[in-house]
Image 1: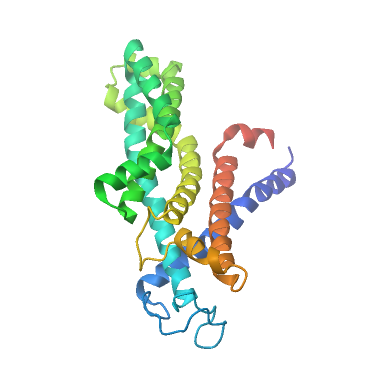
Image 2 (image 1 turned 90 degrees about the vertical axis):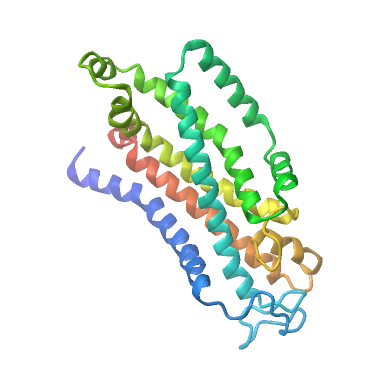
Length: 280
């Protein structure tokens, strides 16, 4: 491969990552801005019911008279919070469980693998209902339910990756030289599985955002006046023909965020996968 061809391949690989970072960065900027400024209070209903976009309300108002732009900005913050929180829970528990399974004896590994398959088959919505029944409907309950559902997926992937690494000759050499198992984990196992895990966690982030929107649509997410995009879609379905912007805007932002995250995951995969680099 000539240097010019290699540079062209790198540029092609970086395009999805760049576009994804731009899309996600815009949503992150909106979410961060909502921490310090929003046009109106989220429970301010003085705008009038279903007002059209204008100077005072740039995107109009919803059926309760709340400013739509304010709702969308707060919804961006809730979507990002739910995604980060769920991924943090899923990564912490899943990687820990996957490492334990990877180092476990044969019979214990088989038991853990069977339990993970059962957990993966367990519906996220049903798990969310159980968590809500124990803690009441809130953003925290939704994040915990999504994170727990994500744990099994991350744990199973981690288990497979750990077993692949442990089968390598350099692990045998490290153990023969007297390297302790904790040192093997931190020095050899985690560095060699992190690239694949990071791509998977990026994909899980997008799934967590969609799951939170679905739970909020069903009334199992953040309660009012918190404006989740899923709750906005649920509230706007009755007026979608007379005021379509109330349904279109949160739907478009949800799609933009998920597509952006998936593009970031694809870009990370192309960048970190040495097989793809050699084949380009």
